[in-house]
Length: 172
Image (cartoon, rainbow, N blue to C red):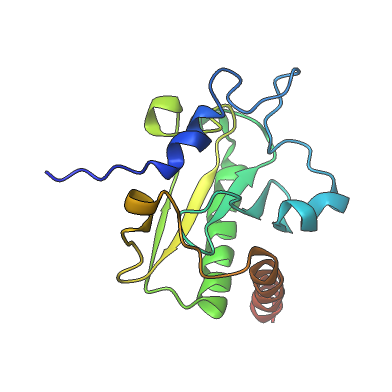
């Protein structure tokens, strides 16, 4: 089996050393984002139980996350309504990505627990990563650089617009 080393992620992962991205009260970086910070924090849509946000450290352009408002480390810590909304918002996020970026595939999942790769392991969240054939290259390994081909601010505007359109289309 071949193994790929991703050195660009090491600095990011080391930044979590002991605090696992929680503040002194134990709240995660995903907790209590005030509405006036939505654009600054790249929060795209607020549901009743969960929200959609852009990943600040994306694997690919358009890497989104669906995050429950309830901070729990486990999937079983979520109630039925929250689990349903995770799937509904995942569907909405995928529709918006298809409208804006037209990916050839999508990775969807969660890293539950630190050893599973969960960098914010105290607050479960679900990753939606658009994929294209050939979307990996030599830059991260040889140049310690990840090439992202879209401006985050412009992509935020395009995704926000696409989410609004998808919500209107589905309401009819």
